[in-house]
Image 1 (cartoon, helix red, strand yellow):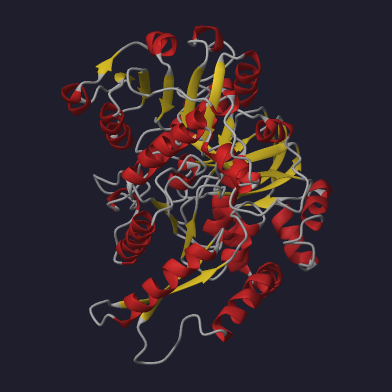
Image 2 (spheres, helix red, strand yellow):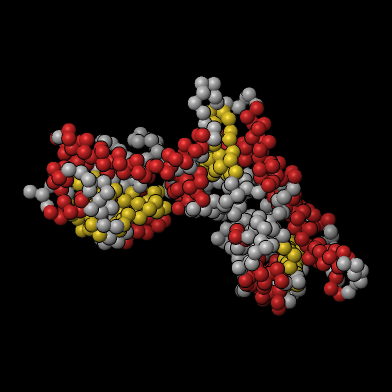
Length: 546
């Protein structure tokens, strides 16, 4: 005899609520209620799914491992290492499970709400492998039905099979209407064709598009498609919207997206992209700090970047900012345009020759900058965790971090933004700086704690700053805010400081750099379409071990 509570939970679900009473009673007879603590593992990613679950109370995690696949030694392709790690969760204590998930996995979603079903589509057929690990997030009560029992019930009566298929079709049809409508609109625009002689098409959506982006990429795409050597066509659509959790849905019908420095590809955004069929993020920049590489790895997403475009452009812009700060060229030009040809202390600068100039970060761009600085006849000191032999040969002297702070009359930030470099300039560093020093940052805004910078300017510790980047720039840079009110008080304060020269992330912006960005991005998309995926992509930027 069926359990009334089991019948009730089945009737509360969207998947079984419209099934016949006979089928519901048959299913209810096989349901088992389990009461589990936090961290209980129900299903392991990469292993066959052997049960469906209906939530009575509590909540469950669905997570994906972000480890590198290793299918050596047989087994289901691409699942072996994930399956091994997922299965190991079963042997852990509950507290250890939560810690392991946090370290090795990304959350796909959270299953919560009375009557929520998971695992159903997997158990309809045998040997369906789990896309994610299902674990209890909180103490939970869950109804379980094993796959063998489910399939036995359906096979016992043909009417049951048609009954469940009808309900499943309704659910799937309802969930896919929006996506099918978008796909239909794309096809009506000529995205992908069915003609016998048409080449396969790689469809790409380019986010955060400004005029220079479309002006550069449109002729590049036209040239690519006109080349008979290419085995496929490329189609790039453009949107001015920035990538984020909401705008990710715009990518329905596209196989790849193209992003820039202020687009956000966090875990939730990548999940949406993956569900929509997007398999590649082509970053038209060197930096990728706004891409969640763990999530990208978990979803099998290829992420490629432009590792270098014009290091000379960035190094030369750093010098331009230095001269603007030191010689007050912007202020002087504005005064002359107003017919004020006088000279006063407000325009007084210093010689760079003979000054001690510090460069933090001596990679390719930093090395070029060092060579320019030496041309001024300045004393060059450097800091980097990896010392550049070419810089040393040219005359640069490596010192400690505290020494470069204390000795530099002018300090350049040229390092990448990493957890270890975030807020290199902070309140604790201010007392270590040489009074009246000048700071130049053309690298990443997050290297500078803005509140500490403002404090340094107001106390005279920092006499001037040239900055092409700002730590909270994503809301403002590459957009026209001249007719709107800026809501960021720190940015407003910076714009009002007389010692600040700020540009809007344009250090890269030369003809040579734009050409290189366009060329490399097109090559990255081509390589992806030709089968160079994930770690095999020549410009992959997902680390194998986070």
